[in-house]
Image (cartoon, rainbow, N blue to C red; front, side, top):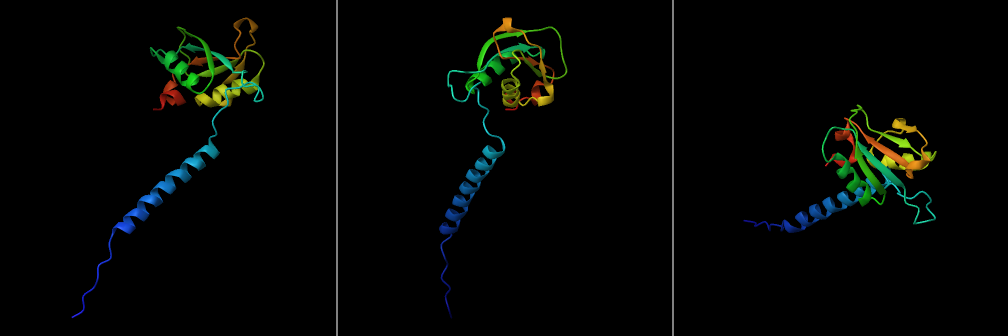
Length: 146
């Protein structure tokens, strides 16, 4: 009669756990490569050149402007004002206020707004680079996906 010796299972469990950790880190790396963080700076060489925006809540949802303000400030943007509007546009958009498409695109990318929804309406009296108009589609925007 031969007796077989059982091998312990803990090394296999340890390998599986470490493999899962490695996969999570690799997934995070790939995600960062595909979706790099958006820079809130107008000029990358000047850390004081933060993009200034204002937020207009036209979504009809109370608190959406404040939520967007907090989301953008956490990412380094300077939100100087939030307001509301009675119009209810179907789509959210970014309005370029200074003829600076690059800054408007950075704001749109941070929020998950398509580049096709960036318009230009230069208004130097506003002292912001872009205005964000929140529409009925806010549930599809980055700040509201959590």
